[in-house]
Length: 291
Ligand code: ADP
Image (cartoon, rainbow, N blue to C red; front, side):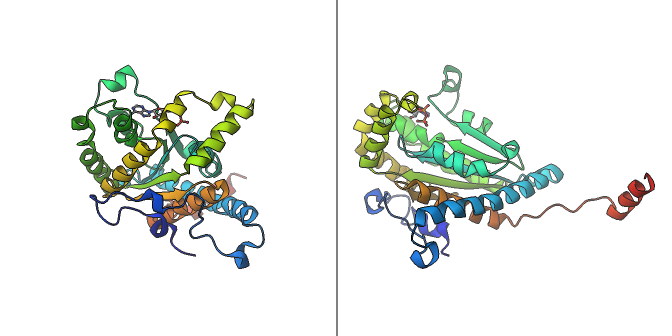
C-alpha cells in the first residue's frame, strides 16, 4: 500500500511554481489497489475499507482524546482542512470519514462569508478561535484559504491585501504545527463537468433543491480563475503543512483516500492510551473489599 500522503502531495516544486491542476485527473484513483485486491467491484471494496479504517480512526481519536485529557500540555490535536469548488464533496467526506469518529471529540467548523464582527478583525481571527483544543480532531469545511481564493477571484479585496496573506498563512500554520497540531490539508478536486452534473442533480431532486444556491453559478462562471487561485495558493502555502490534491469525481475513492490520509496522520503521532497514575491492583482490591 503506497503512502497516500506522498502520492497526493503537491507543491514540491516550490512556492513560485503554481500547482498544475490540469495534470491531475479528477476521475483518477491514485493508490487504489488493482482488481486482484479489490475484486470486480472497487466501489464496494472501497466502501468496506472506509468502514474498516473508520473504526481505526475512532480508536486513534479516542487515544488522542485520552492523551489530551491526561497531558493537555502536549497540545496534541489534528486539524483537517477541506477546500473544494462548490459540490466538491466536502460535506459528504465529513459525513463519511469524520463521521466514523466520536462526535464528542470532533470540532467541526464551516466557514461562510465573514460576519460584520469577523470583518473587523484580521482574517485569521475567526480561524484561531475555531482551532481544535488539545485532544480534539478539528475539521474545517472551508478555511482561511477562502481569503486567498474567493476574495481574490471575486475581487473582495485588492491584491495588496490578499497577496501578503500567503506569508501570514505560512507563519500561522508553522506555529500551529510547532505547537503540536497535525495539520492535513486536502483539496477535493472535481472536474467542471462533474460540478455541472452535481448542480443539476440538486435541481432535479426536491430533497436536494435546498442545497442549490444561484450564487454558485457565479462562482462556476469563474472556474478558471478559481483554478488559478488554487494553483497559486497550493504552491505558496505548502510550507509548514503541505497540500494534497485528492481526485474527487468518484465519491467512493474520495472517502477511501481521505480515510487513508487521516490514518497516516494519526500513525505519525504514535498515540497510545495513557498509563494510569494510580495503582490499578490497589484500586481493584478496594473495590473487591467493598463487595
Ligand atoms: P458550502 O458551499 O461550503 O457548502 P455555503 O453554501 O454556506 O457552504 O458557502 C459558503 C460560502 O462562503 C462560499 O461561497 C464561500 O466562498 C464563502 N466564504 C467563505 N469564506 C469566505 C471569506 N473569507 N470571504 C468571503 N466569502 C467567504
